[in-house]
Length: 125
Image 1 (tube, rainbow, N blue to C red):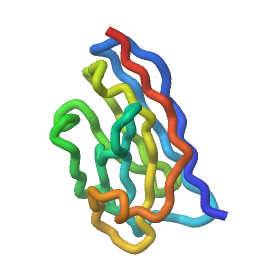
Image 2 (image 1 turned 120 degrees about the vertical axis):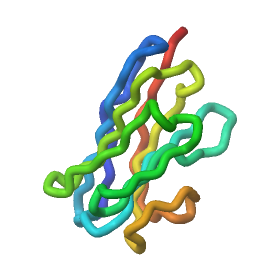
Image 3 (image 1 turned 90 degrees about the vertical axis):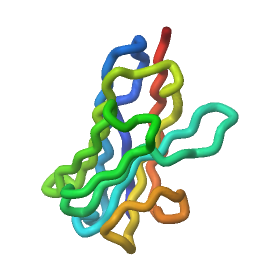
């Protein structure tokens, strides 16, 4: 049974930082793209960041470019999202996702076939 388990969410003041982790179990995703999405109340789930299997290529949503950094440790089957300079509008449930079919991360939800349960990130003003 494949599981993606996120951790590291919480409450932080604007301007602060958080680091999310996503640990995969049940299979290895070392040859696959992984990504982070988020969903704010009343909004669609949106792409935040993605990373290739090697970690050599990343892509980001314009809204987080320069503030967030995605990385991965294939030996630990874990992907991370370092979030700096957080803004109130970053408040959302953050989801980890894995694409079992491709090595390069897509930005569409349909590109990913495994999802975590989500972790809440709340940024206060």
